[in-house]
Image 1 (cartoon, rainbow over the protein chains, first blue to last red):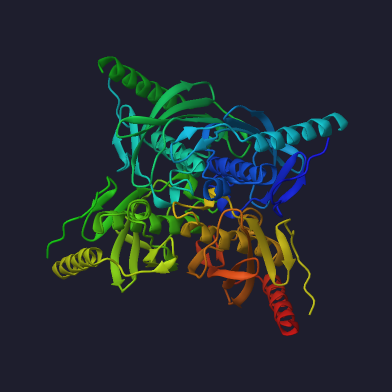
Image 2 (cartoon, rainbow over the protein chains, first blue to last red):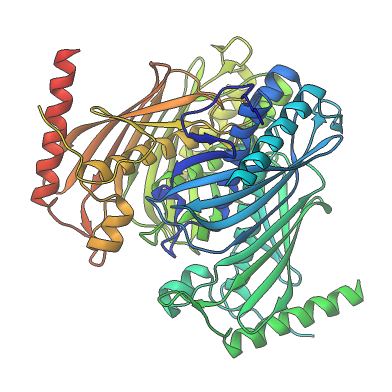
Length: 160
Length: 160
Length: 160
Length: 160
């Protein structure tokens, strides 16, 4: 199952299928408990999903707004935490497409350190016209590319 | 139904029952879409819940760690977004106790601007011994105070 | 020396002259050293200066962009740290006008906990047309109001 | 001039001499002006300096605290901004050693996108015993390794 990125692939993307965004966890990400602050995990999820949009749809959220006058605001997020993450860790956020609806995109993220899952997250975004603040259909070319990404992920899983 | 705070009440707490934490939404909270960035809403939820622990249990999360050698890390969070929030808005986060279990505390937050709900969030924390990284029972005096808080909220709701 | 705010005054503004913005320091503001993370102090400075623009010029930075098509990006910031700040502290950021130039505004901030200075900061902003990304003169009515603010601060200092 | 890292080198370190930390600028890093929010630049500086400590001294700030019971809090930071940075940009933070004193370390950072300087920053840290909150001498082996790093940077500059 072939998948070719339609947008830029950043240095922190260490694997395309499944899409994996690596970051060094920073000093400032921790709190008094000496591990990553809960609130930062949502940034980790967001950053990986934004890079996924860039690679898969060819436009990250900034480009959606500034080039296409479109937006993809969150309507729902959730996260479950299984294992602490520490500054200095290299965290891999693995992004899978859960569902692309008429005007929504649901992504599922697993955060891993050294191959061990530390947390999972889900992000559901509405595809909108930001001037009207109304949902609009996900463009056909985005949907096609997202479905190719999903097929490539599924093919990879079967092989593994 | 009487409820007396057992800890410090910060200036931003504009009401005790239900506990309501007010903040001015900042320039830095926004993103290219010119409204609050998704990731910041979790900080808003966390900040309000931390202040709630201070007022209700008498110890915020920092005090739990530094004075009692206890912690309350998140095991689950979720948020649903209904209405955009903008820099300059005054956002009220209303915190209610959903459940206090043997070693967990679940809080439910509603974020309101001028009385209109903009988002809801849930935060489930485990009560732990941070040295052992093991859950331990919520102390009886915390539980009692949390239940008094819930009773006071319920009494208020009935009156409204 | 009279000074009347020309814009909205948020709940966290506990004093107008000198302008003082109070915040409860949050759990997420700390790091592994169990005190406020260096990077967050700049947010504290920015949040107070943004609220100052709202109260003094009548438009915060968001309003400058969305209502007036103007902007005030930072060209310089600096901070010096004297004393640690902890989650749960109530931090007062006191904002004074250092200088209003033809197209720049320099603000000086002191961060205090319980009346003790913990850090100082300076923020120099350029006043710009964001479409052209060119500096433009600070509008006369903004300048006049800022000078009234400075005069009121000086009068207050003399009295003290 | 030889320089061998004494600590872990993270994936985002794209060059050791001068030390260069690359990050994809994220959606959440922007504000209503549709470019990077001022406050985030300090995080960018901090994150790069923390990774520099890890590679050069063999311990990042988290390791200093949790393994050595030492700390390196900021006593001064400043930044000057020359050029806007946007979400999706790949930002390189180049870290040079300005000075290692008896108990202080001064780092100078240049932030570049596609080889063009966008901002500069300086971070002066005190080396401390965090229990006593007193400054202590930078350990000889840290100082030696930092000086080797500086020599290697200078040799590189001469060649360029």
